[in-house]
Image 1: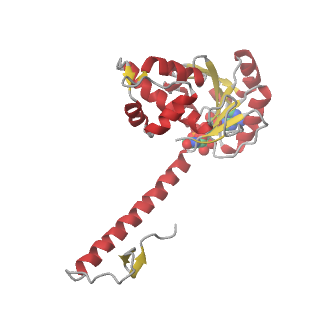
Image 2 (image 1 turned 180 degrees about the vertical axis):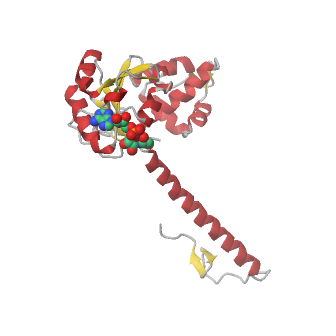
Image 3 (image 1 turned 30 degrees about the horizontal axis):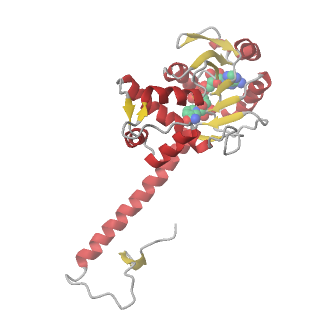
Length: 264
Ligand SMILES: NC(=O)c1ccc[n+]([C@@H]2O[C@H](COP(=O)([O-])OP(=O)(O)OC[C@H]3O[C@@H](n4cnc5c(N)ncnc54)[C@H](O)[C@@H]3O)[C@@H](O)[C@H]2O)c1
């Protein structure tokens, strides 16, 4: 779901391509589900299907981890969970601060999926003095005046921005100046950060717009198919032979023959 931008090259220093890194959490989620069902081994095809990835791509991805599986047996689920977790840096505790505890920040604070993946919500920070001290998901909100102190004391390197867009850059600058080097930005704005700081952006409205685009395409294809069916119903029972040399690469459109492959 995430659309992201990082300031790292396409291949990471240890030689694992970013595209592989982006798929590791998908494998981990599928493997964790298998582990919870005490499944000891899994084939590349089964795991690929569970993760929604092509199996050849999965084998290539795992080769970067030095994991090749055993022919006829597959991959050891527990070991792969460990290997991927280690590769993603999830075997250590990551304290995270969430800045902006409105609707979204409060929902994120209550999200159980952080803790189970090694991310500990170290602090909830908001600029509204009326929020200070109020518990959200069991954690008292702290005022944004405390931001630098909290980051330093807790050794926080990951910050989540859930403030209005207009203040997001300013919040980002403070986080970075205080030592945060990874930012997950929910505010609908592009953040500028210095080299060495990674920014991932999550924007559900962009994801919805992409889905809307596909819906529109599907609706277009359906109406074309209906037009095809209508034209066929009107056509004579025995179609005349195609002219010599014709590829037949045309289909009936509402305005007559149209090329089978339309320009995008
Ligand atoms: N990425 C997504 O998919 C997605 C989805 C929903 C909302 N959003 C965005 O997330 C942000 C928050 O949305 P919301 O509905 O929770 O808004 P909200 O108004 O409910 O909450 C914003 C909070 O930020 C606090 N805040 C304002 N300035 C601050 C500052 N300088 N420092 C710290 N805290 C500050 C406010 O006091 C408030 O509690 C918005 O930018 C919104 O557009 C993104």
